[in-house]
Every structure is written in structure tokens, then in C-alpha cells.
Length: 404
Ligand SMILES: *Cc1c(COP(=O)(O)O)cnc(C)c1O
Image 1 (cartoon, rainbow, N blue to C red):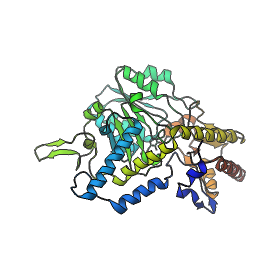
Image 2: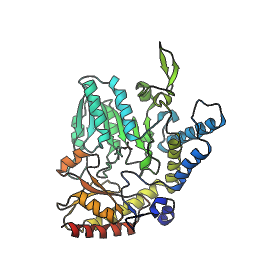
Image 3: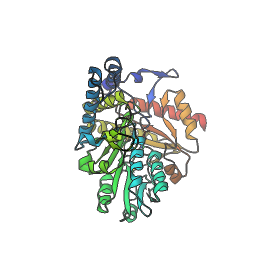
Image 4: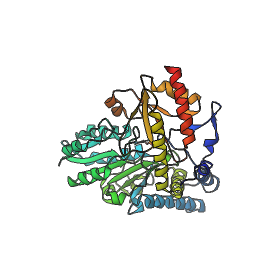
């Protein structure tokens, strides 16, 4: 059992008011809030040992380097990567995906196929379309069904010897569906296709084991799991990271530079050009510590309770339709009420202090499938409460009365 009231005290922002009402923050799938344990680490870095890393002989640089590399090891252990150098610091999920997509430019040729799922975030669609433009490879799409689940029989029939790469999210940010990535990885490997899993939405709720999954690439952003914005990671199997060329050139990523020839640094530095987000990396490690101190099983159980509680109450509202009714889903609820525009409901809820997201959630293909412009999305974290859900439901009912 979680002591939610005690955990809420870790989040200074949860004390604030919006429009004179206590904040109810249900936009966690866009970004999570930051506990003081993580904020303090950032303050401590800039107050006490801010310095550039890796090259300095002086004390501050050594302390900063140690903390940054210690955080990498925390991330390695959290995801159970075999080596710390298989963890590449990036600016976040989008950056990680672009890094891999860019690397595959030199590995794909015309006639090759790569496969995406219908449930993806734009950041796991557009870089691959750009890759296809550069290489002449073809993009195939694993379709979804009415419940918001991937149609695996279609996946099976699309997969063939020409498939080089499959990319799918672990959990859909728009609908909350947990995708059967174990099956997708296993089947893709049968035809020697590599698999990239977008874990931006899974990492706040579950603890993936990249070795057990045998996944080739796994990516996420710190800011969706209690860390700061502007930092994230790419896990890649050593063999793949060695095969991919560097993404950006610059400082840190080289072994030796001359105008005749430059050689690249070893992993992970080959992919880490320039001064990174040092405080962000260290704080990412602190966020992982924080979440593990609560325990991912506790988190998942409690969030499931919130999901069930909210779903039950929402379904009692006349004309309300939930999109994404997969058996296996996390604490994301996307819905519409009759013909009311999601934006109108979102705006009124904001007046009542309730933060939800409205729109296409960077997943327009899903909205096209349902033939809707967007949805209202409420997404919960472990620091949300049933009382907040009650307030949300009551406010939503008021909003509907105002708009009907
Ligand atoms: C948020 C999100 C992204 C993009 O993450 P950034 O931090 O904006 O780079 C990608 N995929 C999914 C599933 C997401 O939820």
C-alpha cells in the first residue's frame, strides 16, 4: 500500500492553486511532476559542483563527471542493461529515436521494409518516414482495432525477410494500451529484424528489463518519470551501437581529430557530442532512485485502482465514450462527450483547476482511425487520489451542463 498523502508532500507543485482552486494535475502522460528529492539534486549541482565533465583535471569537474557517470550506472541497473556504455544520454525520446533512425540511413537500401504500429506518437513515425525518403525503404503499418489494440495477425503477415526494423511503443500515450512487445520482439527476431521500443509512456509505470526482453533499442524521457525535461536515454545492444555511425559531430565524441582524418570515441561517447545536460543526467538518476524507493509494483497496483475507479464513474455519464478499451492498459483515459469539442471541456476544467490534455496527443493516425479530431485525456500518476477523481467527475458534469 502507498502512503499517497505522504508522497504528495514530496511534490511542491501539488500545493498550488489554479484559478483559485486546488490544482488537480491529470496531464501526467504529457509530463510528470517533479519531487523535491529531484529538484534538490539540481539545486545542489548548480550550487556546489557545476563544471564541465570528462576533460577537466580540477576537483569540480571530477565531481561532476563522477555524479554524471554514477547516474548512468543507475540507469543501466534500472533497465538491466548488460553494460553502462549501452546507455546513451540523449535529450529525450524524440532525440533517441532520431539518433537510431539517422544511423539506419547507412544500413538500409531500396526494397527494405521497416514497420511501425498504428498506435505511435508522431516522434515514432516521422523520423522513420524521413529515413524511408533517404533510403528508398518502405514503411509498413501494423493496424489497430476498435479497442485500441494492435492486430497481431496483420503484424504476422506483414513481417517477412525484407523487414529490417520494427518500432512500436510499449504503451500508447493516446490510449494507454500496453502492447505485446515480447511477442513483437520474438517474431521480429525470427526474420532478423531489429526492434526499437518507445518506452516514454511505460517507464513511469513499469520497470522494463531490456535483457529479458532481448530488445535491440529501448528509449525514454526522464520528464515522464519524475525527472527533468531535456534529458532521456537510448539503450542499445552493444552490437547495434557499434554498427550505427555517430549522429552528431563535435566535442566529446572523438578519439582524435586532424583535418585528414578523425576517429570516433568508444561507446557511449561516440553518440554524446557536445556538453550534455549534466544536471539533467544526474537528476534522471535521482528520479529513478525516487521511483524505485516507492516500488514499481506498488505504483502499478495503485494506478490500476485509480484507472478502474475513474473508468467506472466516467462510464456513468450520458453520451461519454472512452477510446482505448484494451484489456491491458495503464492509467490513461481518452474520451469524448457527445459532440462537444474536447477543447471546450478542457478549457472549462482548467477554470476549475483541473489540468487535462485535449487534442490529438501527437497521434493523429489514431484520431483518424476513430474519425475524431481529438479527445480529452486524463492520465494519472501514483500521487493522484480518488478524491481528485471525484472532483474531476463533478467538474466534468458541470462543464457538460454548461456546454449542452
Ligand atoms: C512523450 C512521448 C514521446 C516524446 O517524448 P519527448 O520527451 O517529447 O521526446 C514519444 N513517444 C511517446 C509514447 C510519448 O508518450
